[in-house]
Amino acid sequence: MSMRLSQLVAKELHLLNYIETPATVSLNGVTSFELKSGFITYRVFLVQNNDEEKMTVAEASKLAAFYNSKFFHETVTNNHLAIPCGHFERSFRIEDDGATYLVFVVRIENGRRKLHLSEGELGQFLRVIGENHEIIRRYQVSMEPKLVGILKEAIQGELAQYFSLPAEVVPRLEAVLQHEEHCAEPPDRSLGEVEHEVVDISEWENVHFGDVALDLSYLIISSAEPSVRRNKYMTIFRRYYYARVDRRPTSFPLADLKRLFRKHHKRAVILGIEPLLEILTSSVDEEMKRAHSYRWESALEDAYNFTTVDYVSDNEHCLFSK
Image (cartoon, rainbow, N blue to C red):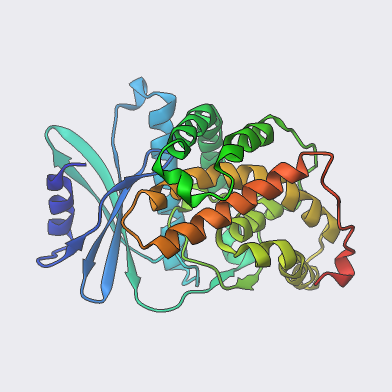
């Protein structure tokens, strides 16, 4: 990304003094960076606006991801939902070297954040997010071989030091990708109320609020410490499930969430490759790099064990989960 683009964005936001973070590009192709001014951080998302008639699958994925994330942030802000994604500030277009870019900005202020998803408030944009998610998912599947190749090359170099079993990472990942687990999704298609503290999640491009197990599993696998993920996931599911049953008829049993949690490890691991490599090649401290690597590698280990006959189920009864 050219320096001029960030300067044009800062001008639109009327920022004179700010600190700019390096730009990153998500798997779906959306560029993001932050402009820090005082106690406020502006997280900027942008994509190039191409001719729709000549658009490739990759370009369509970029726009779908951009609008998915933008629509999500707008709805969260307009409905005052306490979700850790920042407040939608504004959207605009900028011109640079004959190209047009679509931009939206969210404002993030200092403080602890908790996740609180409301069933009624999220239901209103289920359809739009679902349609965009289908476009994004098809593109992500086509990118899986490339992601594995990038990870393989990275582990053969200096990044191997951040993995406990670097030689096992790619073989396990390939085994997970080849495995298909057939387990029906719950027919109920929107998230209920959840209150659980998680890390700040910035890439809301992939959110789709469809299969409740997928959305809850993705949050737990991508943000919780391995000990919490392995030993407390049913506590989180149970809290969600019984709160939901109290509010509305629910047509799937709690045990379905446990089965699907294992199934969705595969997807959470794949989606985690890009942010993992981003962290490991950044300037953050070693402790953060190793913590992120450990969280991802342990999730891969679990996903791999779920696909092998060596995995022994704990047969944990949902009612008596820890």
